[in-house]
Image 1 (cartoon, rainbow, N blue to C red):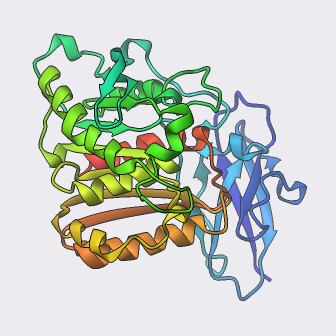
Image 2 (cartoon, rainbow, N blue to C red; image 1 turned 30 degrees about the horizontal axis):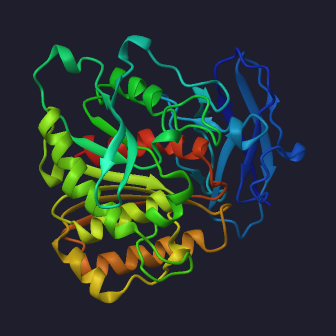
Length: 360
């Protein structure tokens, strides 16, 4: 059995123990058998592990004792699993510069300007009103630039530090992205409908959730809200610069926004979509995506449910079969430990935004 040594360097100001969690120990994040020992230099750690001869690939991450304290990227974003082959010699040292639980680092002068468009924006399609807010680049009022727009569902959970179910921390994430030169985007946050949330985010007139009002809600977004935003803010209104997204049921309704209105949205940010509501999207609807030209960022966690990832992969196959790989780029991110909560979606947000709007 080959022995291989994990070597890690990390800032030395943190006294929490360091663990390795991976495919070889059932992804247990605080397994005492996989706790690293301090190295000879400050901020370094080592752990030697024996692997079966048949093991040719492992995936792993470092944690400080829990998934809320997992390693993060330099800007506080989530990272892909590390991969190694135990049959090869290991010489490289891993490095972690940020940990979950440290808090997101950002410059307060780069925080977006939050403007409440209306506390009671009228939704004529549903005869209701809703709070809608715009998160504008920090220097929006000092320039004449035009910006891409991302419409996000469940606005109550996007930037309120005291949201009952937690927050994505979008305002802080945007400030961190701005420091890296990727803050030129307008986020439009649409509050959900509280008691009517399930109905509004249900796209089907007949589903496991009962009668849905999702199609009326989508008409509001594309027929009423988007024209208002494009008229009152310096946007780039073309579909290639317009995105829509959300999580859970908000992710589901955002999928249908791309299906029904492929000429309005060509950037979809879909986190943990509730595809269990309608695992098989009707063929006559999927044919509409033949007009879609753009990108879809699709994220889900295996710890959310047994059906989350299989449903996502099935949707991906359906979509590509109709739209064609030459027209659509779908990036699929699966977190083996990912749970169904705002904190996890907030970690994914900057990586998704960067890929959807700022990468080649």
